[in-house]
Length: 638
Ligand SMILES: O=C([O-])CC(=O)C(=O)O
Ligand SMILES: [Mg+2]
Image (cartoon, rainbow, N blue to C red; front, side, top):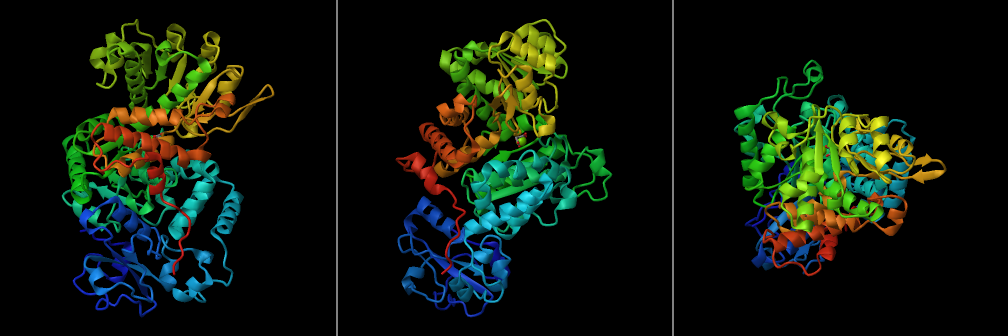
């Protein structure tokens, strides 16, 4: 039996679980202007937890008080109890705030979007000025306000305020203006927001689990008002973008990633839970900052760290079940690989920095082949940076090459070279290398600098995953252009300040010949009369659709083939028109359609591998993905 409980319930003291009382006994018709109730009947009692059921419950949570649509099983009982007594065998009740509290409730608030009828029915008369406006006009007005702010951080804060006051308007605005607003709610601005998180936020946006909560994590999870969570994005704040250890202030990242889960991937907001695990920070500046919001101690490591993470992962599974997706985000290398390996076999986990980035970059490379010719195996790849992103991408390219050529990965890896802070990774360094670098230690004389490596290896593709800005120098880029007609240059580190080179540098130094994409967005560049629009090789293309695919199919484990499936789906979305502009990614303006394609491909792979538990498999997975997507349009509250 599903118990449905929302934050409103805790406000009104009405239980969300099955009640032994009849509809009338429970007084389903609101008498006072403090609360209204919706009763949801189980539309499919035999198949508890079925998609039909979940869609129904989702509708309720997403602001639908108009629920006569699904098999007559769910009814709006505002002012009229139309269900017969025996229909209330297994009811759930959901109370929705009315009047003043409704306006303060971000999930249901519509501001001036409330119609006159709704204002009468929901005790809003006089609480709003008389004008009634459409959601479209509200978006237009908000965009007008946001565009007047000079600083990206001001825009970011305006967006966070909107999310806190009118969630549907926030998502509609974000979806309808995705290319303009992505750099605000996401990289690069979210990086600055994290750096200043302590001073700019008052309201909690996610769960904080610190060492203080050790032994009580399950209890903490249960404090979160939403119960039906489908995806968690969790960070421990140790490597926030390329900005390093921001401790507890890393919370901006899970919050931002999850708002993209909804806006780009259509996962409903109430199913998303941002979490920051606070084991301390080694950032001296934060430790000495009197306004720092986290634990004032150096990072716990070793057993203390693993025990907390183990308790967290166990509590998550215990509370939300086998199908909860946990996305690891911005952990430092030394924990990221271990966590993925440790929990990959027991939980539905996904590391966005290792796997999401790999999938998006592979898609871009596959698309780029249309511009440069050849197969993946015909190219040579050189990375600057051998951490999560670098080795993750390298591994996925090697896997794809090995599938295409029928050669073992040990063989295909030989086309891929990595440079770290000590120079080219070569076999003579093997002993002192971290385990994730070892597969890339090929036979070669040691080379100290990136420039030496570029000149020696002569890569066709240069990929920056170093987290260090301006490391693709003029000499490096010019060298790439000297032996490649169209050098592929990907400067992936975030935010913009950490990008290995700018779009302008890439196009200027290659005399307009580069195929360039970056992790953070760059504006189009004009070079000798021609406009070059750089692509954004950011995992935001992948994780929302990837997650949706896992969730909608009830997948219980992530498999590398699903990353390849996501990659293929994304690469297939690049049109001739995009190629003509030198683009290797489709524009973000189509992202919901793209996410549906990715979700469908990922789900299809999950069914093929026997890892999907939601049966039977829907016939048309793309249509199904689209039908699962959250809509930010206002509902009518009758
Ligand atoms: O957040 C982003 O823009 C991409 C990413 O995962 C990272 O840089 O860690
Ligand atoms: Mg990340």
